[in-house]
Length: 412
Image (cartoon, rainbow, N blue to C red; front, side, top):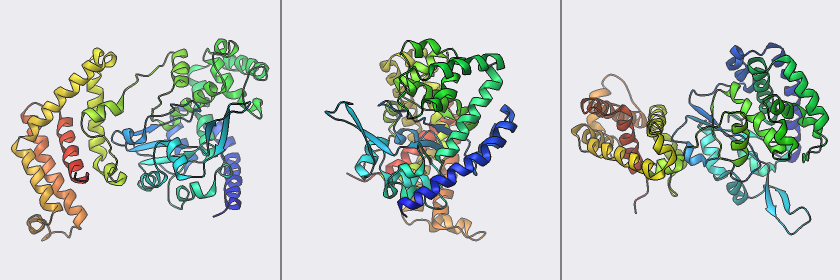
């Protein structure tokens, strides 16, 4: 692979965008969003997914390791550059990411770990710039054949599709026409750090149409605010949960009356003792949280936040987590939980012949499949026990995740 190859990819991406853009704009309706998603990407996405918008504002996203247990798929940005504070007239210098340490600092995950998650489709990387803006050695492993990814052009299609859907649902043609006219007149007056400010007109017009013009004229909002809204609107097509922890996002969402609750996911996972830790193989950690376990954790977080005081006070949230941990401990002492651990140990540590004798007379099961079968049989028993004791099914799944993590974590 070479820089020439990346230029070819960028050119191809631009051509694909041109081929799809006109047909998408003509055919797009809110009902066709799912079909448009597959047309833009060329592949489908798992049901449970979150989307991390790309914003140049410091605290841009929640750590990927805190999202792995909650979602089947994380749509995550890959940036070509990083910023440095320098004693220069501009103060901030932007440099291309060329080292593994630079990649990890920007994305919160090592490149090798992101590749492992991408190979399993737990993370779908999307490129925030054309391919030829990147260092070829940095993204080489992320653009191997067969790894799902979203190109710069494909993301632009999704952002445009989201805008068109919102215009159809919430904005009248008259309002849109007036907003577009004002944005065209204002964009050159605003301090937008873009080589071509006119390219920002559409996103700026969307902000205007949703009632944010005053914020831009008073210099409270910048180009980054307009970019964020464009990404946020693409969620209409991605049909995913927006995951963002950023002042710019809060300002934009609150200005249009749709500020999401900020859930301290890292805090909750640590309290539930299922957080990621150094030394644990990222692919093993991801495998612990299959679809059912991820669904259970989302349910747990939802239940924790039913109490309005837990949303406001960390002490109350901690108390709720403690109460949940007590339920897990009670379940752990049950006979079904002991059976779960025993069967799992038998399958993993060489006692699989007992289960094999009961199954392989009918069907040949590989070792990995045997382990999963053993865990499934045992977890069924735990599920039944939770019902008998009047506990939520998600408690059983939390116990299951802890048991599996215990076996994955390095000793000492």
